[in-house]
Length: 103
Image (cartoon, rainbow, N blue to C red; front, side, top):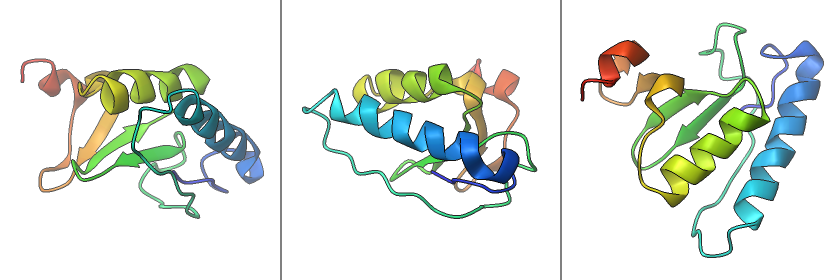
């Protein structure tokens, strides 16, 4: 997950959401995932912090704690991509979330 500073004012909200990501993962000890922070990935174009899930290569815009929780619950735990939060996919490039609803 990126932790700013471009996506939120001085990265403050991004850092807070990185903490939320950790709490969500830690609350599910059966999950075998790791999280790491990175500095600005620039790809968000200052719209929201980015969470990238590998090995799938799915890039999510996560504007708030609810989005983080959805990525953890629906994708990491449930195995289903959160299509309305996806903006980029490895191998496909930028995507329109409306197009993914038909996949």
